[in-house]
Image 1 (cartoon, helix red, strand yellow):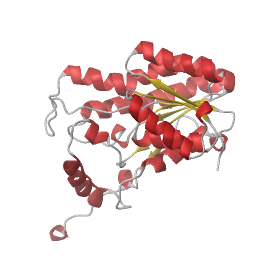
Image 2 (tube, helix red, strand yellow; image 1 turned 45 degrees about the vertical axis):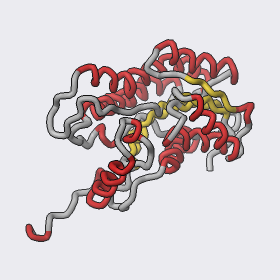
Image 3 (tube, rainbow, N blue to C red; image 1 turned 90 degrees about the vertical axis):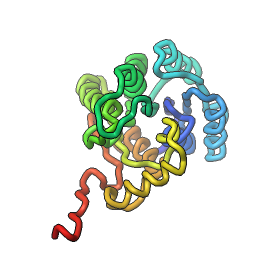
Length: 270
């Protein structure tokens, strides 16, 4: 199990789900962590969980910020380096979508929805990377982005989100090539369906999420269950560690086998 003592890690979107699990795991493994999100209350909850897991208050920095605002992305990096003196790992986890204009069979969401989704899932990552890279070069650090299997496995109705994640995958490749000579690695984790509040954050009721989860998992996921946030967090931690020192520019799929699965033909067609 890799340790991160003397390492400084930023985790965006750390107030719930994958980001929260990742923050708690890094704290448990000895890292100094800067956790960001838009809800101070939820970030406090992440801090409490991190301390319960073995982290210490002096090694946890809360930054209430909106990654879609350039002034906030700069502040995230500046405040982290000011407090801890360095930066070793940037985890770009913040992301999401919206149901505005949603239609599961037609490509008709307004362009303002594209702008919102792209700013959250793609442009914010570029902004954070630009601010972080000078510091990561000094520490020979690395970047881990949280993408999605939607980047390569289209699903009707989520076009803008999936296009943004596809762009994120190629940004990963481009940055890996550009930063490799500087000793900075860049990788993506591409989750499948994970038990988080992703859909609830877009306004989907809990009971609907449960129905969608049940309907999706059985025919699509060979492991027959959704993933848990900690399972993605451990993948992120592996990629960020020296155990992955020769891995860069990769998209690591963690989806219970979804992308390799072809649902069987109905028995009446056999």
